[in-house]
Length: 134
Image 1 (cartoon, rainbow, N blue to C red):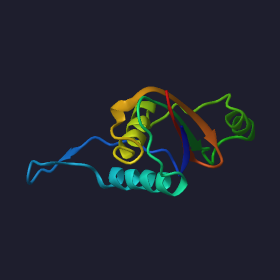
Image 2 (cartoon, one colour):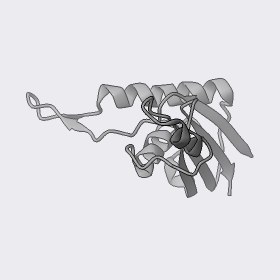
Image 3 (spheres, rainbow, N blue to C red):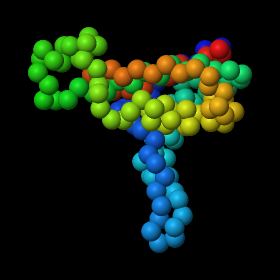
Image 4 (tube, rainbow, N blue to C red):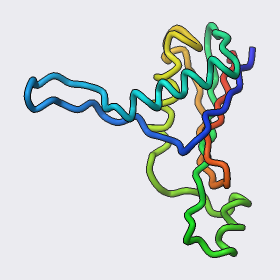
């Protein structure tokens, strides 16, 4: 079984939990919750099937090209010759995507036994996700 879906918009990292200075209780930042909900919505609208067993994940993050980029550099970015060396890090992108899909696309992200991640530039920022039985 293969599941493919796209999360439109700039790739977002999973932020670290914050501690309330008043109560001392840890909480997940609002932006992280919103992005995880967006990933869930995209998955449910585009596929919505649950996958069992061992899973291989392929995650490709596409960042928007900065407006100040020269035409020559822009072309190199679109060709994949210049790749994003900026935040969020690939491990944090993976964490935000895979954690979002817990209990929805699979029972737990511990089922993911292989994960390929790449970062590119594009005019259409997004994250493409492919999950398949390994």
